[in-house]
Length: 411
Image (cartoon, rainbow, N blue to C red; front, side, top):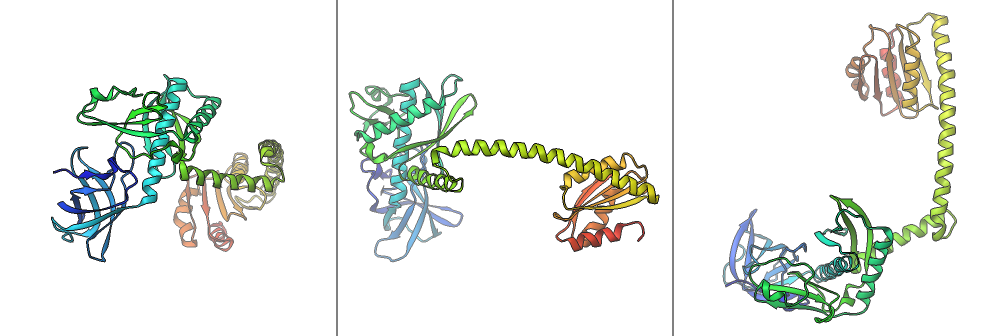
């Protein structure tokens, strides 16, 4: 005899007594089936309940980490953390679910129905995918390749919240077969073998939404609390909408509101003026970057002339140059401009702030990549490169300078 599923008739029930009717083993732990259970098994886009199990009269409590079924008419199996052999068929046990997690899923699943129905009624959108994750819910709305506008998202969000706050009844109606279920105006016709449950939000004769579903839902739309859309992005020609409902949405909006208030405080403006301040700062940063690029170019040209003059005056075939102004990438560009003008030169560039050492060579006698590979590790460095240039990074200036001393030709 299959498990009697309490959630189908009373989604608010959180505990029941039952007899164990089946036992399996998974990873050394007991997996049990009972004659009756409050646990919702994973399915229909909704995660399973989690909770606890204990033998009646025992103070030993085990966790139920997941529940699942193999058919909608079969047993509900409870994966426990009880070592294999803990339970026996016929044991009387107490099952209890995490009430907060169940109600959160009831809010979220009902809210998903209402939002999908809203996209359908307002724009003709069809829900082609649904996922209830830890941080948000996603639905994939198909509009024949058309993307929703920001104004349409705002309208959908406002419309569904007005329906939530209207305190509409939420009814689950069972039918013996799929054809019978079509007596109700279901939004999406999905043929199904066996009994069918249809969830209706609003009056049965004039519903806000109506669709077949095996999940758990509150009895009134007001229990969803609120629905917040976070963002929309394109996904395979459809609109992937990220949102959440109830307490999860409230917690997210509350956290975002605090971040917004802190950002506004730091910019000494009202929250409504923050976008304007950020745009002005972005323009200022862009102008500063342009000025910095010009100054960097000027410095590189001046330093190139300085290095080439020093090499020419001494006739040296190597040169060590240090900078605390130019970044490592700018130093590399400087180095290439030098060795392109000075044949046979081995150039060592050190960036003091990042402890980065750059080797460049226009001489066949110095293979930069090989030098780094052979020597850098001995001085706690790491890096690599090619024959004409290589880079090594060190944890300290002392390590870098010891490495440079080791590889300079006079040594």
